[in-house]
Structure formats: C-alpha cells, structure tokens
Amino acid sequence: MVGAQACKKFQPDFVFLSKCLALDPETVAEIIRDLPNAMWYHDPQWYADLDRPDIAHIAAIGRLARTFFVTGFDSEWRDNGLPAKFLPAAGDAEIHPVTEDPKHAAHVTFMALGTTRNAPNSSSLSPDISTSECGAWDGSNGRTSSTGPAAQLKK
Image 1 (cartoon, rainbow, N blue to C red):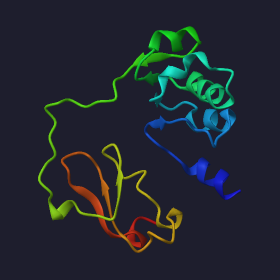
Image 2: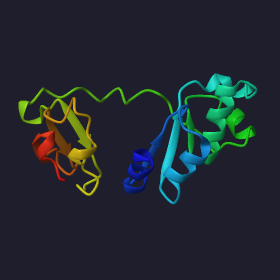
Image 3: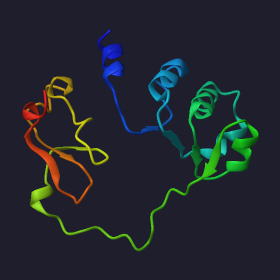
C-alpha cells in the first residue's frame, strides 16, 4: 500500500519512461495520465518480435506514451501502432565536459524543472542515503535550491 500512496503523491512535470518491465500497463497508464511523457527505447531492432513477451510488454507501454522515441526502425514501430519518432542515442559532438567544481558536488543529486515542488521528501529516501550530502538542482542557472544532508530536505 505504501507504493500506491507514493504514486498518488508523485507530481512530476514530465514522465520519462523506459522499458517498464516491472510495471503492468495499467500502472504506467495511471502514472502518466494527463502528464507530458515520452519513452526512449534503445533496442529498436526488435520491432518484428512482438510475439516475445518482453517485446510485447515494451510495445504495450510504448503505445501508452505520447511519443515512443527509438534509435532506429521508427517507421516499422509506427507500422506496429506506436507513436514512434527517431531520436539518435548520441550527443552533439560540440558538447564537452566542464571542469569539476566542488560547489556542485553531492553524493545524490535530484533534478527538477525550475521548481522545488517535487524536491525529494526525506521520508521517502532510502535509509542508505538519508545522511548523504544531497543537492536539488533547479536548472535555472546551475545553482542548487537546497543542499545538505538528505534528512534536512523538505519534510
């Protein structure tokens, strides 16, 4: 029952789906209902193997997604009834790592979309990380919206 309560409190701005093999389609549908979402599938060569239970499940989840991004075979996935679009699995060659800056260091980092509304609640964190140094990054200018031990994050 704890999982169901956590799902009801879950208020994301966007849901990024993966294979969701441990979730039934009804659960995924409830999680993404009325929310912007997308799925990004990196094994697109399996488009012709919908008879395999794992691939059938992935296709069922992909049909629920607003967009089913694949790294190839997008027209074949669309032929299978999925909202498939091509999205390569590579970044811009002009992107380079930045120099490490200790002010951004944390054992655990949470990212949000310019809001702390969905910052982690310390009661929902694993005991293993509740005393870890954490940062919740708002994305506005690289500054953290809260830092310190996870147990000090909003209650």
